[in-house]
Image 1 (tube, helix red, strand yellow):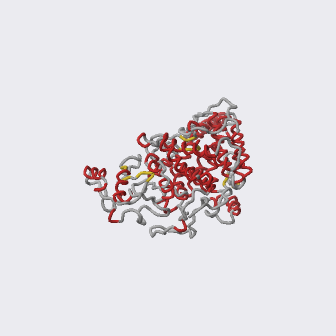
Image 2 (cartoon, rainbow, N blue to C red):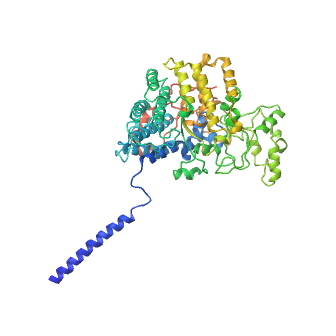
Image 3 (tube, helix red, strand yellow):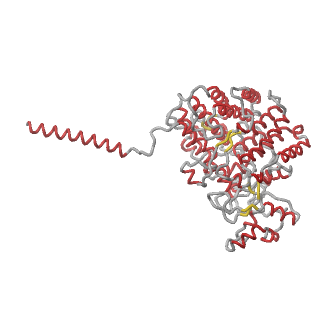
Amino acid sequence: MKKIYIVLFTLLATGMTLTSCSDKLMQELNTDETKAAYIDPNAQLTTALLQTYGDFQTMDTYRNYICGFTQQFAGGWNVTNFAGCNNYDDTIESLWNKFYNVGIKNLVDAIYNTEDKPNVNAALRITKVYMLSILTDAYGDVPCSEAGLGYIGGIANPKYDTQEEIYDYFFEELADCVEQLGTGTDRISGDVTSLGGSIEGWKKFANSLRMRYAMRISDVKPEKAKAEFEKALTANGGYITNADQDAFVKYIDVPFTLYDGAKDLDFRANAFSETNYGQDYSSPAIICATLFNLMRDNNDPRTYRITRHYDNLKRGNTKPDEWTIDLTDEYMAYLQKYGKEDYACEIGHSWYAPWPTNIPEVGQIPTLEDFPTVAALAEQYPTAGFFATGINDNARLIFPWLSIEFERPNCPGFLISCAEVHFLLAEAKSKGWAVPGSIKEHYEEGIKEAMQMLNTHYLPATQKISDAEISDYITSIEANDPLGTNAREAINTQAYILHVMNPSEAWANLRRSDYPVLRDRTKMEKLSDFTYPDPDLSTPDRLLYPVLEERYNKARYQEAIDRMGGKDDWHQRVWWDVKHGNFE
């Protein structure tokens, strides 16, 4: 018996040891040493800030839809095919899917883990407000109070807050964050904006956003808007008053990574620059006639700073200046030769159809004889195919494109600028709100700062706008007393030009102000190369919800749809948008 007991004890002890070793081995096998057990909230702030302009998939929503809605871009296949015609493409969902799954998710988690870091916590909350504002302005009612709480709060099906509730939250949250900033010693080290982690800078940023959102609701809740705007003017820390205080995300000069970068969350480059540059030579960002004519017809010195004429026989996918040949001066001479004026792409048109009527006819398509720069390259590279039949580079150059200076990977991603703040102050003053200075002073200062912003962040030394050009332009446009005739139109027309590289704000402010007057899409010509499944060709007022919301968050989704009248309709205006624009 004794021997049996010894054997049994030995076996049990061995089994226990083996079990212990097995558990340890399994734990080691199931532990990914490349993954951190804890994420620094400052790193999560960095991710969210960079995503605002650095996510290529999100920028697809801007390129395909929003830039077409604003009539700032036209002619590229994507914007012609989707912006007002087709809403079935999954890129209409990209803004929602990526912002919620990456930016908002990280911010909510980081906010939960930074109760002992008041400065970082406030910066995270301000960034969350900024990202949610883009979402609600684009889609209307969206998850806000319960967004991102799947893990922390166990909420798998977040409710869609009404836009009015969301804006009330914005005002309260921004005011609270301003008071919280500076109450701790923690550093905002994850700040990749021009604010550089400055407590005072973040206060000014928050108060300036509060002014923007107050103006946004000024038509639907004028008294509330006035009160919030005036509170922001006198709030702790002040607001943005000069270019040194502008808030923008800093990106770096790295090769474009397109969709692969978006999948890997590589947001180091400005992805809006990437999308505008285009993924192939036949898909450049072409400026819409609405924006171009607005600048050209008023002798705006920004006309040929923002736009240029290029020959792009082929394009590299990593840098915007590879095989992009600037022919602007030679094209102007070509037009003068035939007694024609420059012509931009109309809404709903593509760069290849229909053929414009007020430029040289088909028989006068540019030839090498008219363009010595290209002729020299054709001689140097005889097999390249410059101006060859079927290549169509000589047809594409007819239209003004977005200058490649705005398509570089290290272009800033503007959140809010002093130029915009001056336009907000000018309009607030026109409404009789308690604002220092005059309408004229803020209007003129907004124009000056808007042009200086181009000088500082985009234009090379040879293209910078001079003080004399700025002064002459202001004198010229004020000759007809635009502020006396229609201050709202004058101010917001300038804001429209300012926001050419900020699509979300361009679209939101355009719908809120209804200026400038846009072309009526219902009158546009239908092209045989494109389909038009939506019988209502009027400019959409919002983006459609992602299709999977109806399946996976059905009850909450249906509540939002019911508030909209029972249909997810992109012609249904959001809460603060009281009128369907001005069109002609």
